[in-house]
Length: 47
Image (cartoon, rainbow, N blue to C red; front, side):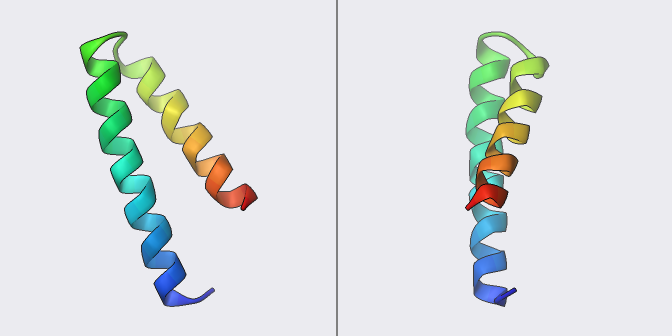
């Protein structure tokens, strides 16, 4: 894997994690955060 791609994926996952964590903490708590991270991961891997 290209290292630039790896960095892009990591930063994408990190920023997605941050957004989901903030939203889910405000609304529904941890469960949605975890689901969101898993779905973000699977979408990234699928690409």
